[in-house]
Image (tube, rainbow, N blue to C red; front, top):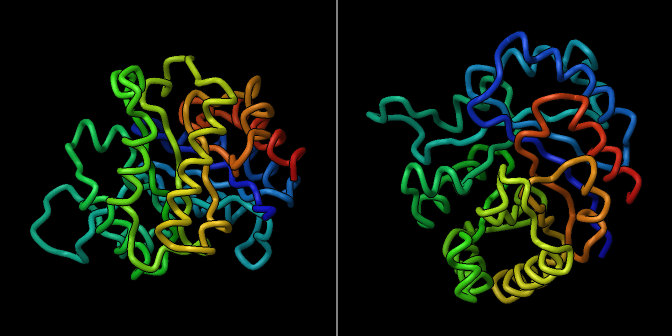
Length: 259
């Protein structure tokens, strides 16, 4: 099945109002690449101004294709005594149309469990937003020969109810490759994406063939074409290279060339 590529950026704890100028070039590249979807997840404080800036470049009524703005995380509860957290309703009101959940840095730094990640994804579904659900293994787990078992196990435990391609994407991020400049071989990536697809089929049936599986692990303009051309790789979740148009746009263009 042919799946439309998704090139998504994750700014993490980076960015400022001044940095939003980078979205001008990214939005222009998104409009010039109608065969791919392009998205950027920004810190919560930047969602509203990012949406305003992108909408100013291309009015909301004419933003297809265009640049989607999302959140980097959400809390599963609608409201309550959760100091410092942000709900789906809050990011939606700010203009976000999706959120990342289960990123390896959240799982490691904030000790998030698969059950919490699942709850967050389900909250996004209830709120009408999309989700990019992340799974991935550490270097120790890969060296021990457990990579596939760890990743498919995370997927099974984190997968939300009513998982469907119209609102959910999966991102495979080998934890040891994020920000290190190291990447698995293309064959390694294709094998893991194939394992994820197979586990998805076992979990949700034929719908799995429409779900996009993104690769996230030190994706750059130099390696994007090769990685995006691998089997079952339907896009990329990009960290540091998404912070500037100069580095992110070549990845978008690589995706567009494969559309």
